[in-house]
Structures are given as structure tokens and as C-alpha cells.
Image (cartoon, rainbow, N blue to C red):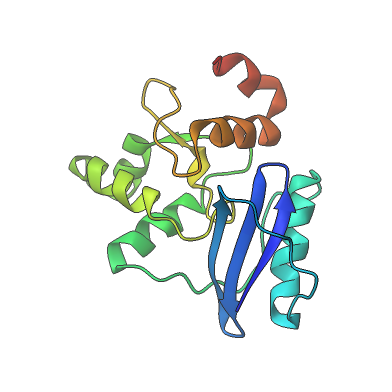
Length: 158
């Protein structure tokens, strides 16, 4: 089952079943927001909306992402990056115990099925640059500024 929500960054599609949320992504094409939301997707819709209103920093949803064991390990490590902070791909690789896994970490980060909830937008280049983001770098910049408006604004100039 899937629903669509309007966000400041475009239409967000949430996919899931009663056993958990399996996908949250931003769509580039226009889509009408859902007018009916199944009961098991209401918490996800409410929490996404609260995040964008600036009222939520930590999601508490039943998640059911699909991926390889390595991808799931990377995604779990992304959940440990605090709201308003960033890590580099190298930082994540080091936390996982293998600095040579930086490309694999970047690839897993790019396959994150749970936009915003698993905060892949908080991963930046070792030099502090915004790098690779499936939703577009302008969205990554927006999300980082939303989470930490005072310090991030001066870091990323486009």
C-alpha cells in the first residue's frame, strides 16, 4: 500500500504494510496527495509532517526496509548520526570497521529506501562538500539547513 504527501521538497511517497514501512521517497513528478490514509500508515504520515514543521527530530516507526545485510548495516549506522549533525562517508566506513569500504558505504547510502527516516542526507564528503544525493543536492542542502539552520547555512553556498 502506498500514499503520497505534500512536503516543502515535493511529493513524498510512503510505502508499507502492517508489518512496517518499506519505502519513503521523494518524487520528481507531480502526484496528487492521498486523501485517505490506511491506519498503519498514519504514524509515518504524521511523523513526516511533524519533521517538516520542525516539531520532530527522531522518528519512531516500525520499519521494514528491503536490502542486503551490508546495506542494512550501513543504514543502521546512519540512524546513529544525530539530528543536526553530519558524518562523512569515511566516518561511516570507520565506524563499520573497514576504511576501504568507503565506496560500498556510498553505494548503500544511495540505495537507502527510507528517505529522511534513515538520514542519508547527513552524510557528506570528507572535505565537507555536499556529494551525491538521489533526491538532488538542493534537497540535501535544504534538509541540512532545516536540521541545523545556524551552522549549515554558511557551509553550503550554491
